[in-house]
Length: 288
Image (cartoon, rainbow, N blue to C red; front, side, top):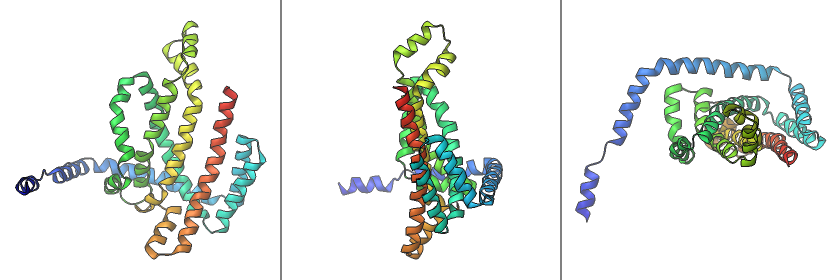
């Protein structure tokens, strides 16, 4: 038995070496493209961060509170938003909060830009979803550190590798929720649209997507939460934001700094969740 085990271990399949060689070739061949993406996307995200930081904090808080009231039509959420953002300002976490906001907004936008169309396409072509399911499972199961390394090597330090890693981590969710929402639309609605002579495109845009909107919006809300959950890991590849405080606290064994950074992330998550999640419920009630 030991000889069989020794025989197996002595003839190791060079998976790592082959993967490294393929990755090195890929990097050498397409590095100018990755450099272009890093420069342009990095400049755009840095400019957005600078623009947000230029807004006085109290004016920003007032604008977010007004947005919360416009969406929710309830003062309880508005008061909660104001208190949470004032807490962030009080703790001296305003600048990292703006940096985290930019990362979350861009990563959510890219994830939805990819995920919703792919989910709709999968709902129209179920065989495509069957083919993509193993890939989606792998993207959700593989630890983020595994694909954080190639993202770092391809795009360098900063916001861009954090954006790429976050999108890979989060994009599977909008694909699945959009697929479920569109494919499980009430057949009576679809038949009614067909009876009125709707084309396939009209049926999709005027029947399926509006009926699936509550489920899609749940996916949007959860995608934002997933992107926000990546801010600590993003800090490991040089992305600024609230995750930097947590990483520094871990390296310095600084409990106070870790509590401040962790609470900052929690507060931002509460604000986003309360604004978006209740909106989904309101829409769902209006459908019934």
